[in-house]
Image 1: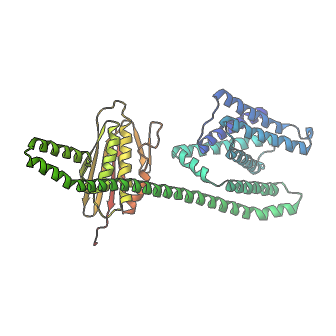
Image 2: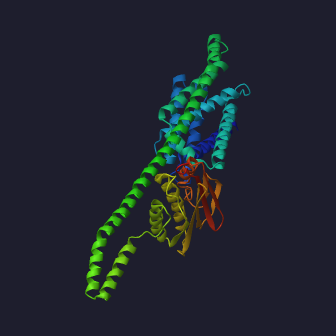
Image 3: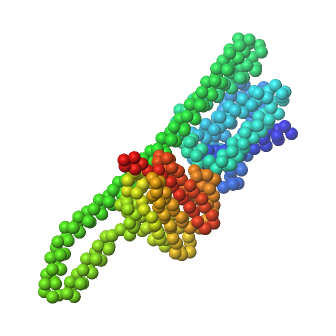
Length: 434
C-alpha cells in the first residue's frame, strides 16, 4: 500500500510541477494529453527505483541510479514541452532540494522512510498548487514569466547552490549524533546560511524589479523618440507644403490676372477651383490649436477609416506647457486603443470615436470614448483584460500614458460598460510666466 501511495504522490507532484513550469515559462505542453500522461507515469515509475533494498546495490551504484532517475525526470519535462531549457533543470533541482528539506524537517515524526517520502511529496505538491493559485488569482502569469526571463542565469545557480548547502547543513544537524564536531559545525553555520540565502533572494528580487523598471523606462523613451521623429517629420512636411504654396502664390496670381485681363472669366473660375482643390487636399482635417495634435488626429483618422470608424473632435488642445513627445504618447495611445477596439466589430457598421479636449485653469483634460464589441474587465487602471485571446486589448500603452500624466501631476481614469470604453487623462500644465 505504501508503494502505491509513493507512486501516486510522486505522480501528483510531477503533474503540479508540469503546470507550474507552464505558468513560470509562459508555455504549454507541446505533446498530446495521452503522451503527457505517459511521460508523467514514466517519471513516477523511475522514482520507484530508490525504494529498492539498501543491500541490493553498493553506495556508489545507488548514487548513479539516483542521478539517472533525476536525469529521466529532467528529460521527461523537456519532452513534454518539446524544448531544451535550463530553467526546467533548475526547477527539477529545486524540487529535489526542497523535497529533501521537507523530509529532513519531517524525519522526527516518521520512522518509515516511504511514508516520509509520501508526506514530503504531498507537502511540496500543496505548496506548488498554492503558488499556481496565487499567480492565477492575481492574473500575473505574464509578469512572472517576464520577470523570470530577465533573471541572470548565474543567479539561478547561486540560489540553487545555497539552497543545497542549507539542506546539507540541516542534514548534518539532524543526523550527526555520533560526530559531535559535525553537529556543532552544522548548528553554528545554519543561521548564517539562512541569513545569507535570504539576502541573496532579496538581492535577486531587487534586480528583477530594477531591470523591469529599466525596461519599462526604455520602452517609454523609445516610444517618445519614435513618436517625436514621426510627428516632427509630418510637421516638417506640412511646413514644406506651406512654403511651396507661398512660393507658387505669386504665380497663381499672375495667371489669374492674365486670364481676367483677357476676359477669360470662366477659365479664371476653373483655375480658382483647381487651386482650392489642391489646397483642400493638403489641408488637415482637424484644427485643435496644436499642430502636433492635428497631425496625430489626421493620421489616426486614416487608421480608423479602415474599420469604418470616424474620429470626432471637439475642444482645444494647448500648444504650450507640454512637451511634444509627451503629447504624442497621450493622444496616440488613446486613439490606438480606440481604433483597436473598433476593429473588433465584425459587422463593419459605422462607428464613432469621440475625442473631447478641455483646457481650463491650467488643466488639460483629454477624454476619448469608443464603442466596444467584447467584454472588457477592468481590475484597476494598470490591469485590464478581455474575454478574447488578445489580453493586451485596451492595456497597450496605458502604463505609458499614466507615467506621462503623473509627470504633470495628473492621472488617468478608465471605465467601461457593455457599450463603450472611456479613457480620461488629466494633466496640470505649467504656463509661461507662472
